[in-house]
Image (spheres, rainbow, N blue to C red):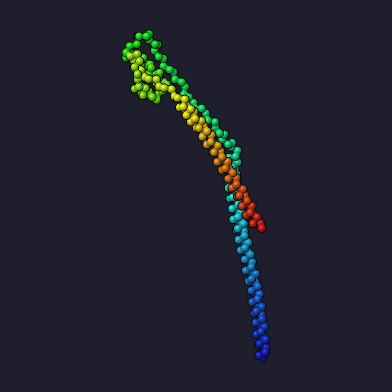
Length: 208
């Protein structure tokens, strides 16, 4: 073979090899592109599954909170209870005193008369029984307990003012409790609305 034929065959071989390399590169690019598309599709599927699971959890949590809020709203608010008057204990039976003796017939140291008087006074002021027993005077030759003075007008007014202030404080505490309960329910309702808005935004991004 002459030199020109050898060179021509060499050029054809190079061209053939170049064409094969080009076709191989195209096929490899297609394969890589297909693999990349498959990986992207798999990633999108996994992301979609994760987002769907997250939305399901948020939906269940939202449903639970909504059910709790409905139950609380269905329950009536506690009405302020009017302060009731303190219940008085049933009156005790006043011990019967001995019938008065005729004038001049009371003897010194008459223990029965002193005992009756002590019992009568102890009924009206039980807490100061010992003090009354110690505080005695002599009347007609008999030691008896002094009668305790009645409360003054000022003392009665102070006691009435204290009772009125206690009733007002009780009503105020009930109203404040109801106000806090309404604020808590409003905050829970706002939280549910925010959760719905976030879920809708996520769904919109996934569908875009």
